[in-house]
Length: 110
Length: 117
Image (tube, rainbow over all chains, first blue to last red; front, side, top):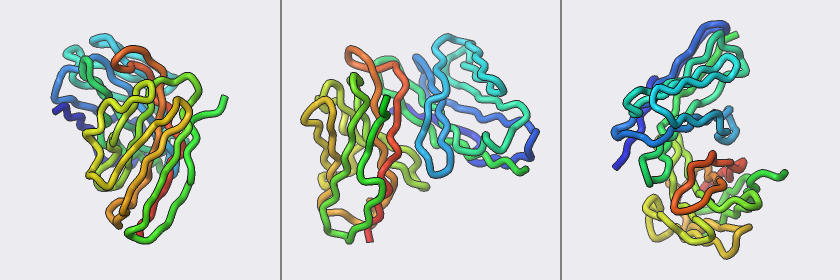
């Protein structure tokens, strides 16, 4: 079945440093979603990517969908303490439901 | 607009007891999902419904787990009998959509933190 992997599992950065998490699928995806879960909270939808090579930005966050639609990345520029949390990608195979990756837990040291 | 509402927020019970988790999806959403989250296994999809009909229950761990959606505004996840390894945070999520699958974002409830002693 479809597998979605994320690296790294954990990332500790100093406030102001950049952060990137990578999402890889074992199969070609129709689209991919990104979610953020704050400690003690629930996953919250951030963005969806659909097109091959698509790049979307939300303030300091940049999301990219690979050309082959099998991988994606989330990059945060100049992290802040409010960025702390776990970032999940969820990939959807054509006609199937979304499969969540294991997440990348981000810690930001002030 | 109210989001997805789950109850209870916390549940502590002894093994062997029946546990019922409840979810009220966002009005108008056609899809409802039940997830289980643990440190070891991450976020696992247990079952999802489309228009109150169970579509995929392949993630339900075993026969001790059952889920129902008697109407568009209510769903339950039941564990009977409960075991310590069932301890986890259980999330309900809903999304709008049409047809056989949904391309829409999922809106998660606050979750139920379940502890089985």
